[in-house]
Each structure stands twice: as structure tokens, then as C-alpha cells.
Image (cartoon, rainbow over all chains, first blue to last red; front, side, top):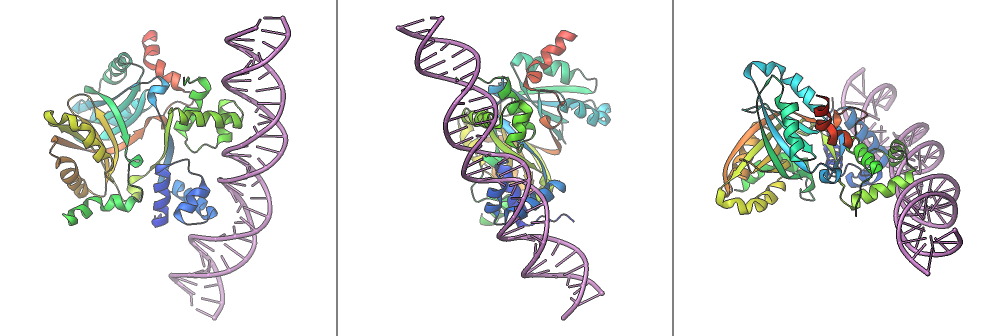
Length: 171
Length: 171
DNA sequence: CACTATGCCCGAATATAATTCGGCATCAGA
DNA sequence: TCTGATGCCGAATTATATTCGGGCATAGTG
């Protein structure tokens, strides 16, 4: 059905690194005509390989200098409500990301706040208040690095897929 | 120096939600001329308010269906090397995000892998191997929601900044 | 007050990019 | 070989990005 070939992978790779890349430039980088490239990008959006495009702001410049990650555990009997809880949490304004986890914690909530005071109030009134919650643990984020911004120039998804195996062979 | 006014905030807001928004459409949404909008976007990039633009792919479609978050603790005497370690980790192919934390864990590493086998090898050979590492704890990610994709239509950064305080006043 | 410098905006003009479309090549099945 | 389907290309068209000159407001100055 939706087979991703090498060119599609390169398209996704380039857009992950630089989402606002013009189609013409993108086409050039992956070695196809702009018109063809456009068709492929639309197909990738259509079949869900490309999900969305987001700007990464400097939160401090927006008046939100405090970032934190809150680990949340639900009560054992409330596990069934995990989706309901997450669905509510993700719409809260301060929430940047929500990770559903296996393991001891049920999820991690990545938030940005105006101050440690707002963070405390946010955790207290929005996250902990819920009856399903057993405990929360708040960790300040000092810095956040984005992988795709730091990868080697000539890399690609195959580099990622082969990363560990390759290294093992060499050792 | 770099004062962000209301229009700038709306620009950043719109680009966070939809990074590939054409400049013309962006200008229309924030109520200024395209030429003016372009100048503002460039200024926001210049002064660092807008840091980068990234596509969000479906990792499974790229052959990386296993996501995990690894909590890493360094040995107390190795805390000085925290930046060195992070600098190395962020360039590894499987790493999507690195969060520097305060608290018990020194950081969280968000990774994508081809299989649980690759994940195990990756954690073992790339993350745990380092002499500075005291312990790691790996948590599978079942799902990842992005906040800005789920916020109410009419929201803005001021909604975020006022979120908790507003709620407190009402209660 | 008049004058000027500054900053910010707009809109017309131009350069560049996005998009559509017809046609060609390739390939698989009949 | 014929034929339909698929995917690519490049020219033509449409739309967007970008540059630039000038207008308007504000603030500082004589």
C-alpha cells in the first residue's frame, strides 16, 4: 500500500531538519523535479508518514522561562481512565508534550510556565487534583536539545536504523 | 532590545501550530501586510525567538516503531562532565530529544528504534557504557501527543501565561 | 512650535516558487 | 505485442516571496 522508498525517506529527512524548506530546494536535494516532489510530499501527508510541522520557539522569549517534566502515576484502579486523563491534560495551555509510558510512571508531561510559582500551581490544581492521580514528580528542565538538529550532515533514516548494529559489527 | 509585541506573538503562535504556513496566509491571520510579516519573521529568527522548524514524522513508517525515554543518572563525581556526555549523546542517530534535568535523574533521552532489541543494544552500548553513568532506566513510549496540536482554536501565548492564575481567581 | 530623525508600515513591482497539465517512459499482465 | 497503470518530467500558469520607495506617526531638538 504505502511503501516508502529511498527518495521519500530523504524528503522526510530534509523536512524533519528544516520544515520550511521550499519545495524547489527540497526537490533539488533529493534529486527529482519540483512537480514530482510536490506529489510525493502530498502522498506522505496523505498516508500519515508526515504528521505535522512545528516551529520551535524560545520559550523564555515568550515569557515562559520555566520548563519542567512531570511524571504522573495513576491509581491502579484508575488505569482505565488513562486516556480520558491524557485527553484532558493535552488540551491544557501550558502542556508542550505528553508521553504515555510503560513502566512505573504512567506518563510524562512536558510543560512551560511563567515562573516556578505558576508551575507549582499548575501541577497542584491541574495535574494532581484529579482523583485518578496517585502521585506526581516534577523535574525542572535546564535545557532541551533536539536530536535532528545535531545529527551528522550526511545522515539519513537508514543511518538511524543501522546505528547500533553497525557499531556492534565494528567492535 | 528585542521586545516581542502582540503581533510577533501571534506570528510565533501560528508557526508553532503550522510551520509551513505561507507568509501571505500568515500575514493575513495576524492582520498585517505580507511584506511587513516577512520582516517580522526574519527579526524573530534573528533574535532567537524562533529557533527552528521541524516536521513530525510517523516513526513507525520510517521503520522505527519503538520509542522510549531513558532516564540517565551520572555518578556524583562525574557531574562536571554532564555537558560532554550530553554533547556526545545528542549526535547519536537514534536520539530524538535530550532533556537536562534538575532532580534525581540528570537527563532524559528520547529515542526511536527499529526494535526492542536495538533499543536494548543502544542503551547498553551507547548510553550505559560511558564511565560517567551511574544508572539508566528505560521506559517504553506508547504514545506521544504534542500540546500545540491540541490547544483551543482561539488561544495564544497570553492564554498560556495566564492559565493557572486565571483559574485560581475563578475558584 | 517647526524641523528632522527614526522606526514601522504599506503596496506596487519584480523575482521566485508552487501548481497544473499533457505527454513520455517504464513495467506488469493479458 | 498490446494495453492499462504508474510515475516522472518540463513548460505554462498561477500564486507567493521579496525588494524597494515612500508615507505616516512618534520622539527628540533647536
